[in-house]
Image (cartoon, rainbow, N blue to C red; front, top):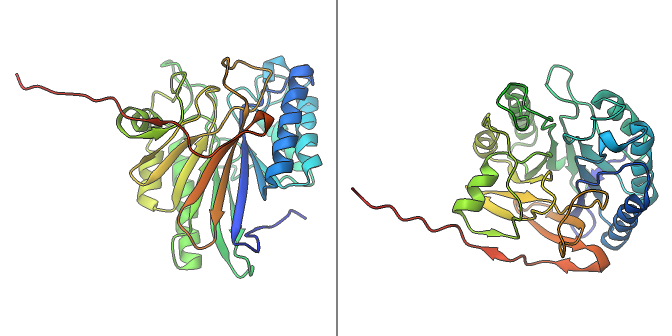
Length: 314
């Protein structure tokens, strides 16, 4: 029986986001990733662990199923329920998304779901966080498969399809009707949407951007749907290993996680870690901070002012 998610006695619900673990075959670098994950989970004692894609470096795994089970063993040892979405590298090896999803579902503490078959992608699902008294859902967590690579010759990365957006809107409307009001919600996917460019360039952000935002070249309108539905307070992605900023765009906080894995590229002086997110029951807001290696907590990230642009008339 899958574990039910609900708010704690103190009305809080805590999530630890691990992203871009890029596990290979259990090499020494992978073991460093495992030790970091276990340490953060032990200190933070979250109610849910979320893996936001590129769990594996698929092409670097001798046996992708075996490698995924090694990662799952880390989360199982924590005793904490966990959910996940796929990244663009997970299925580049010996197992496809459907096969990897089946492995995830074997886990006792996994609450992942393949999602509706008619919706593009594998792993489009929504989890409810129950109220403390278990009377009804009090928050929603959306998980969306952001795909891998562009399906046309324009190149770059895949985009979230219109059918996925319609699915999200349908789920949002269903829960609003069920409860009688818009529930506070968060959304998790791997590849950032194009609005991550906009929030960095035109709005005050917090954190760093050491590499380009590798969003898809096509904008299918997920952000517009989130804004119009009015439930999602924040989105959480990975994909770029040395970006960790967040910024508020039209009432939605667009957030990067903090890259977790050591068996992949990084940047000197840029520590691996995780993003921690905390909800409070009955509040339409959340707190977030970074938990880095060696136990370093970053609750206030460096402020970044948008580029000042001036325009002159001819």
